[in-house]
Image 1 (cartoon, rainbow, N blue to C red):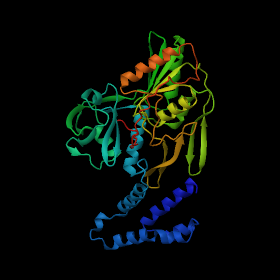
Image 2: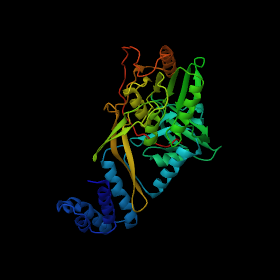
Image 3: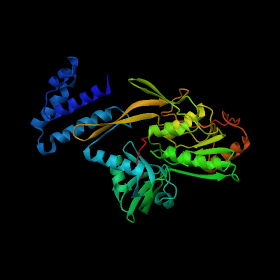
Image 4: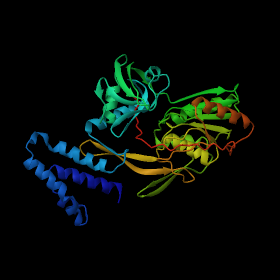
Length: 410
């Protein structure tokens, strides 16, 4: 069944809730006769509510419509699929634009909603959240004295963002069960895309990628050119605490390190698709890729592709495990569905979703990750990839459940 037809069916259901006949709608779309019987309880429930509920002011059509669509999405059991009413969808678009292109007033931390609770994925470096002591894994249980139980992503972002200089009080519960309260003053959070420097006396070029947007490949390429001009003998690509972003940019970035062949394979209900490298014009210097549990989505695409092609070695901790792709569908009233429409796999067909990538060299501390990477790159000086990881018997990777990855950084 095509995406267009599936969307038509959903819109047909929406129209039914505001008074149109389900049977006629499904017949008009060429559905089997059993479809009307299947959906008739929904239409009957709508009629009973409109005719008999004792407080009709609580049952306007728009309210019932929202509940019906939201209920369908929740029944899918997919934490990444959700229904966004009109105002939430507007806020989603505005927030995404700020996240990708601009700057905003906020605290500077990546958040997610898991089982109706608000979790800190990671505070960003040198932001109000990190300086105050907010840690990855903190559950935010109150914002300005109000409980966050049942909060949505959009509601949380709205509460946490605000004008520069205004305070926010957060009550958090740590992973050990202890609780702490923080009063944090909002600052202007500028989305940093890429930074680079030289390490080990100028022998190693270090590139950190913070997010994936329309400028990511360009900024990394500028960094590469500068580092190569300085005569570096190897590279470190730091993807730690990078929650991902745009799929095309992940393919573009991976192409800077992969000569040819697939970057990822995508499987949807309509078939499979392969995204190939666009070609690498730079020397295949020894490359260490740094990852951790907050390396997710587009970052995992890049890391997995580099490793599968033996163009680099992974150092750090098991990655997040977000290997599915979402597509937004705008509905006729201006609301939207964000639906998981495909799953991706590494070039060699390894599954990423809910498993993550296990590094070639597993480390316990972030400082150790960089140190081990520097040592390995120096040991490979004068060589080029394809390259293999150093021998190790440390395979202590622990599985980690895959929570809801969000776009926004309040």
